[in-house]
Amino acid sequence: MTETRVPRDGKVRLGTLDGDLRVERDSEIDVDGRLAVSGQARFDGNADVRGDMECGSFRSDDGTVHVHGHLYVQEGLETHDGAVEVDGELKARRVDADRGLIVGGPASAEQFEVGGRLEGAQTLTAKKVSVGGRFRLAGKLTAETVEAGGSVDLHDVELDSIEVGGVIRLAGGVVRRSVEVGGKFTSDAPFEFGGLEVGGVAQFHDSAKGGRIEAGGMMTADRDLTFEDLEIGGLGRIDGNGKGRSVEVGGRFSVRGSLELTGKLEVGGQISVGESLTGGALEVGGKIDARRAVFTSEAEVGGAISTREGLKASHITLRRKSRATGPLVGGVVKLDTKATAEDIYGDTVELDDKAQARQVFARRVVLGEGSQVDQVVYTDSIELKAGAHVRSPPQKVASLPTFPL
Image 1 (cartoon, helix red, strand yellow):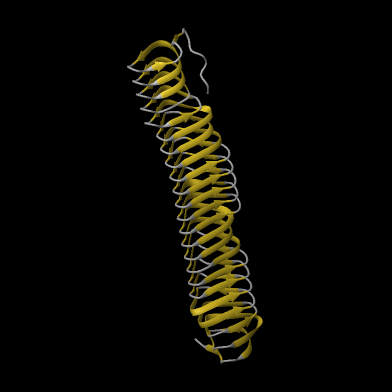
Image 2 (cartoon, rainbow, N blue to C red):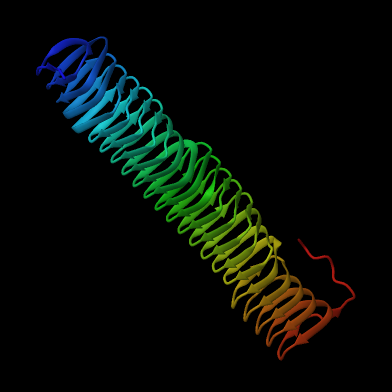
């Protein structure tokens, strides 16, 4: 196979070449129509190609090759201590650029592996994209997997998975399986995802819908957020409505609208919900505040719960020294030692030693030693242990008033 050579500092005009092309350092090639190389195009050092180019394979060593047009490579594009800049479209079977790749037009390959910087002004399509440094793309990114070690700035994505060691910002799109970010994640437009794991900060500036969300530091959502399971180790905020299966909060979490769950809410720190809170089960070790809270099974309060319209569950337990503000409504409501509540409505209501409540409405009432209640209204039975005190005489009635919630 023949080889065409361009000497160092050479300035030539080339068109169709049968064979290989070898270009030495600091050369300029003016293209006659299109530079078409049937074999390998190899560049040693910096070079300019002024026009469109196509070749069987492309290699650049120790420099930057700038193609002022389109670049079409039948097989692989490879650089060793080199970079490639393409003003137009780039097509190749695979791309392996150790220092960097900049593309002005659409870019497509089965695989992009860039050690340094990858920047695109339009779209990029691939099966796999791997970037060691910075990855920026102005158009849509379509790929199966993306891995980046540094910072990532994308417009619209359609991916199976993405893993970023540093910071990622994207307009929106879809990641079907998983998003893993070591530092900070930000989405600016509607975003759908299979799962999201962030070691630092997660920010949703528009609506988002996905599977499991795990944020080790802080998570904020400016609009509605739909999820399967949400786990926040630090701080969290949803300015719209939240909807999912379960929530576990270790720090502080707030929802401006409503929070609708089908599973369990676990609060070790503090949570506030501006409107209604619904779920399957509740476990509070810290503090919870909501307009109203309704759970289909158990609600266990170890710290404090405050509602304006009430807490309802099939079984409510206030642990030792815990506090409830707002009505409690349940099948069974139990206050452990020194727990305090306001009005209680239930089938069976039990107050342990030195527990306190304002009013109790129930079928059956048991008041432990030293417990205090302002008023008791019941239909079946009441049991007062030593030192239990009801300020107004207990009233036995044929039927109880309508319960709240």
